[in-house]
Amino acid sequence: MIIIIDYQAGNLTSVVRSLKALGVEGTVTQDPAMVAQASRVIFPGVGAAGKAMATLKQLGLDQALRLSFGRGIPILGICLGAQIILEHSEENDAACLGLLPGRTRALPRVEPLKIPHMGWNRVRFLRSHPVFKGLPEGAEYYFVHSYYPAPAETTMILGVTDHGIEFPSAIGRRNLVATQFHPEKSGRFGLQILKNFLAWDGSHAK
Amino acid sequence: MLSKRIIPCLDVRDGRTTKGIKFKNNVDIGDPVAMARHYYEAGADELVFYDITASSDRRNIMIDVVRRVAGEILIPFSVGGGIRNLNDMRDVLLAGAEKVSVNSAAIQDPGLITAGAQAFGSQCIVLGMDVKRVAPSSTIPSGYEMVIHGGRTPMGIDALWWAKEAVRLGAGEICLNSIDADGTQAGYELTLTRMISAAVPIPVIASGGAGAPEHLRQVLAEGRADAALIASMVHYGTYTIKGIKDYLAQRDIPVRLVW
Image (cartoon, rainbow over all chains, first blue to last red; front, side):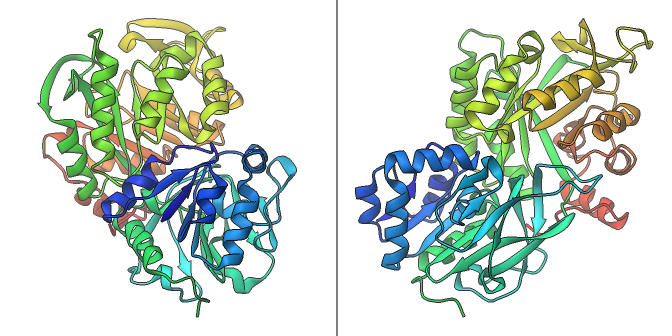
């Protein structure tokens, strides 16, 4: 069962639709018991870290996510879901899930560039990973965010993107991989990432 | 580096797309769902739907269009026109749009921007601005005034002030339409676009006046726009999105060339 975690942080229909385009049914749930039975978890979300963490705790999903990570099932974080897996976010000065060591930081505004970082940008992949296989040079992905994940160890940075500064846009460790961009809104290359994720066994990236 | 976005705009009336010239004499040019699919495959970076349906059943008609479009494309799209309250926003977002655009309703009730940003996130809330050039005065020091009703009703509000105010209220993006340039195909309003874009930290989409690829280059470079809205140029097959992007790329404007 592929579980899409709903913690009232934005609209999940585009994630469901893109799975459907791959011929796969995703189950959207707020129920930790369902998450416990998942074979695969997608953790999307947009919005503010503070409110998101409060809702996750209230629903008991914080613990469900920690257990899922511990069970070794493949987990994909998207956007806010790539930020609150770290220990802390500068947004609302929020304590976060701590699945990975590191902090979420505010993107500095480097004029004339705008914040939020909104639109299509490239990702320079630093390490090979099964989830990012088969993507052509020059492919771009859709971003919309004002904060970015900064893992504590460089080995967790799988790809970087330039918007005034170079920031980690794909991160991961063990059975967890996460993108700051939205694969579900990034055309066929985004779809390729989701397809790769669905085929990934969660084993350590090489 | 972030690419400049090329965004086809589809005016939708009674579930069909039209393109108006100066908001008059709209001509029916097709099925919005088929056009969305076409532009998605042709390399559009995003789409904008503007609902100009007048009938009482407008909401259901448009929600159905949004739902069907969302099933066809894997790029973001926004919906504007007749968004008057949080329920309108919720309906459109749940039907599959990424963003909603508020225009006259936000002028009449600025709290709508804040309420929308709090409920759905700033990134969902686009402020649509219809702007007309006027003689600078103490009320309109920038020389650009907010108008509604397709330009017929001046609001006595300075466009530059309103853009900054909307950022403060929580807007995540501005779609800036020049009533003077709209439908002329003679080029975007560069002075207006540069003034607004330089004054706000959020992205600005330039709208109104596109007739040739050079117009896009001008507004994305000199006008400092983050994205450019196009309609007639591509609706009638005069240009393709790929052709426009190739033109821009050759002139050092960063655009998405692989899709």
